[in-house]
Image (cartoon, rainbow over all chains, first blue to last red; front, side, top):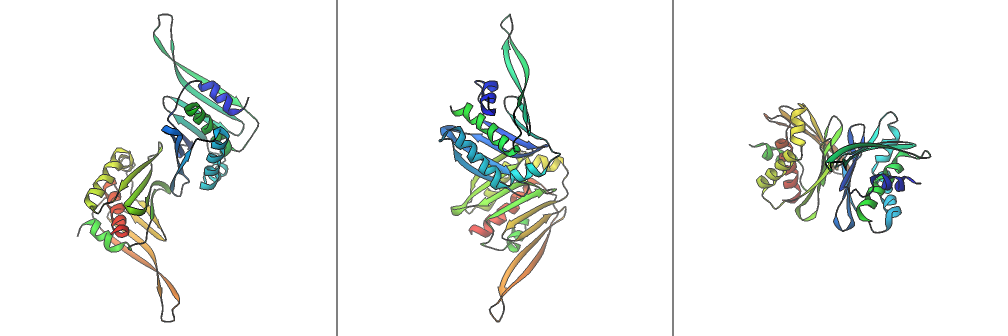
Length: 153
Length: 153
């Protein structure tokens, strides 16, 4: 199964309005999934902050390519690749936290379940996705693609 | 003379379309001055990247007030105060480099003139604005206001 399918399988029917990626504790990429498949992408390349508007109208693969182009051309990919000892992570609300490495993603989510008395119970779940090593920037774009898929498909 | 009046005298007019503020080499605000007084502001509050839009309609006091409110509510002003920031760097395009210190603002700009032979001569224009302020959202808002006045008026 590819990364997107696994992520969609894990997150299931959840909808996230935005996602932020971090290099250590510094936000480097925030994506807002707005109405009408309009997406705002903000980038911190450590020199300046940049904004891009794109649309989710050509399917997930096109979206991933768009994000990957932004990540590459804005300088964020260079940041990620050159900071070998740094950690790339991502967050979204309601509680979702993940860490990205060259060959895997660890993702933690809080889920509400119901006990025998039908009372809501918060469950903390942790998943690990393994795949063949690929550039971190591309993995970041794929994760964004999975979130877009959940939001719009 | 108020701080904004001093800044207006220093910042070259009709020149800067973008200015970025940095704390410890980390961009926290990028302001893009677009056509028709439209101002796009990108923020990094160290938790996520955000985006705001304003319109400069000639009333600089209102504009500065709006920007200051945004800097407070977005978490930038509290972050500056919490970190007890002693210096905020800023740069504009084309060449402008500035520093906000505890009691002064230093601005270096590059200017181009023509000599008697019609050859281009570039020189560095260094100005200091002495003022009794600490780096804060209010000071940033006034600097952004001064850039807007010099571009749009």
